[in-house]
Image 1 (cartoon, rainbow, N blue to C red):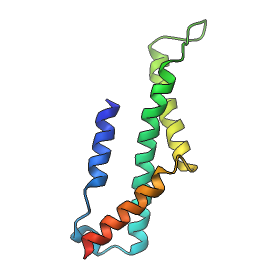
Image 2: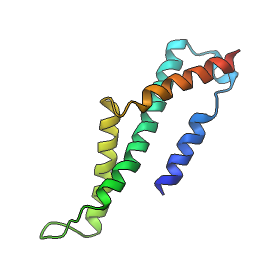
Image 3: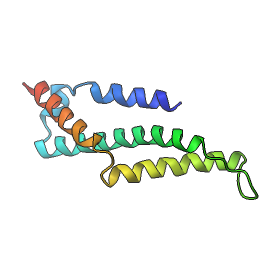
Image 4: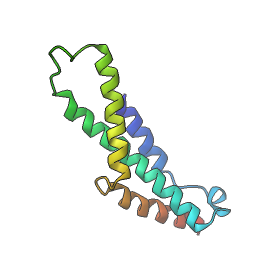
Amino acid sequence: MMDGVLANALTQMARPASPQSIKGESPGARAEAARVAAQEFEAVFLNTMLEGMFAGIKTDGPFGGGSAETTYRSMLITQFAEEISKNGGLGISDQITRDLIALQEGAQQ
């Protein structure tokens, strides 16, 4: 399921904005929108990585296991990924932001 989300995020971000959609926005607003999109993408990427890391952790014992743990672990991983991304992340969002701004500038010309 996460692979579909990741593929969708990549598709949405790789598509350059149309000149009509970015024409009326200020450069600051476009840069902020690009930063937010890049940060969200990095959170999705981190979520995928963290799911793989947590998959190997055994949770047997008196307080582990069950379907509720699966549900709450997924939510916890999502929150971890969002917080890591908000606090600097891996640096992926910085490069994506630069690329998105370059795509937008190219679409304007």
